[in-house]
Length: 461
Image 1 (cartoon, rainbow, N blue to C red):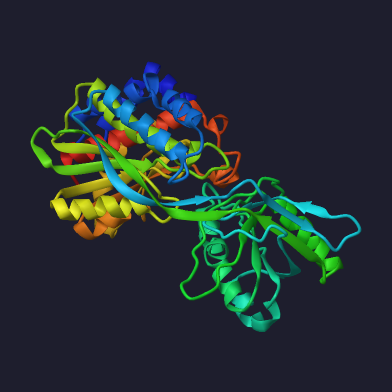
Image 2: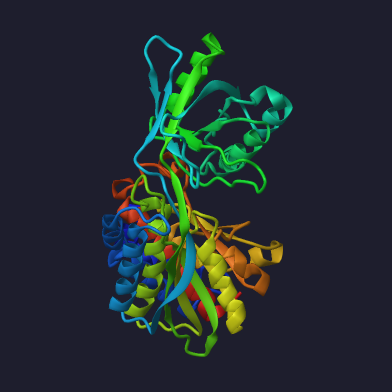
């Protein structure tokens, strides 16, 4: 990503030569404008400095003191840049705490063998003495359904692994995350007393458990649920092969509390010609509590802020209003996003497009757009301008959890795509900290988002 700064310093002429050689771009004033936007976000960018400040706040689990501090930080930051309007949008959010007890150990060996675990949110806790039972290892939900009564009184151990897949592990994540999200209720339906879920990471021998959300189904008993590190999952699986009757004791002090008041944070630059048409750019302000939410989604937060900061610094005011929205409680089901969409509907606001960054702060690749081939082709006409920051890959399929509720209103939803090869190395774990983020890559993504946001707000699709 250091290439970006070098190209901006000595190679902008090369970029100009490339783009003006394309039909219809010779003499295009947008070439110079987008070059300036990219330079502002990379050479003068504030995204990494802002991420350092935000992660210093600490974890920002919805309903927590850390989330409240994150909201205060975001509001002050937006105000410090002098945006036209800054506001807090109230929203009630889930409040769950993991407590200070997260222990699991194999108890049927001569000496107990500790396993690295962390509670899934919003898992229930265990009695103080824990839950102790035999373990049934499975590869998926269907296997539990087939076993039926055989899991009664047992701890179900979901051990289907994620794998790497090119520049993104999202495909593997989508094929395995059901065991984390629905595994507890599927097991409880057949009488299981707890679940252990192999962490959602493609790292084959990682000793950091990765948390995440589960969903309890109505009418089914809520049982304790944890993620287990891939290292401990491998160890437990090997032990089960030698002794299928081994037992595990699980202790959790997790607890669910009443919903808590919180806020989405918003700021905007008013459009010069179409102020009532909005182009939204955003990420989610909340994070899991094991790390400091750097990649997930501190990077999306600071990149989205950087879009407006860069435009304002350059004195650019596109035709449509550009609004940054920092959503709360994405990790607990997109609660802030739902509230934002409800307010959009209630106010009758016209949201022309929305761009979300929630895939980490890695090197830019491009954007994905929700919709058919016509929308993809419309977005591709901006590819030459995005090429300066290596973000000219445009594909079908985009959006994100926080902007998806806007789609029914006719909003064009777009997801920022970085090179997410190693995103799940850090995702939802104690490794998700500032030192995992490369400043140049982060700034490159901010430049790509600022460029596309300006183009859509100015030219439309």
